Image (cartoon, rainbow, N blue to C red; front, side, top):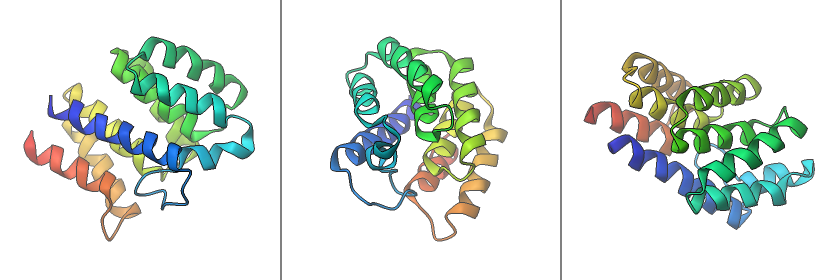
Length: 156
């Protein structure tokens, strides 16, 4: 249950970043919309985020899978596919999507945090801790994503 709450915080941060179209530091909450507008995926991604927010994970996964075909090198599309897959209960699909997101952008703190939630959900505490170490390197002064993983590991 604690993992689901943290995962929802990550979703809310992504939605807020997309709606504000801010230039906020990617470590805190990736500005999903502004990162993707130039790639022609902004509106569709915003729709997918809304589907996740509305808890229509099946439709979100479908939309994000289509987006991933035309934007295969977009880390945020893959990250959100991982989020929607996780929320739908497809842990294998979530794992694959998070891995693809990190293959594209190995320092995406949101993906590392959300992947850690997946690891904790399936009982792989060691992999979650590994993600915490990666976040320590990415955020030496701390960041929200790192703090969420550290807090979750302490609670389990």
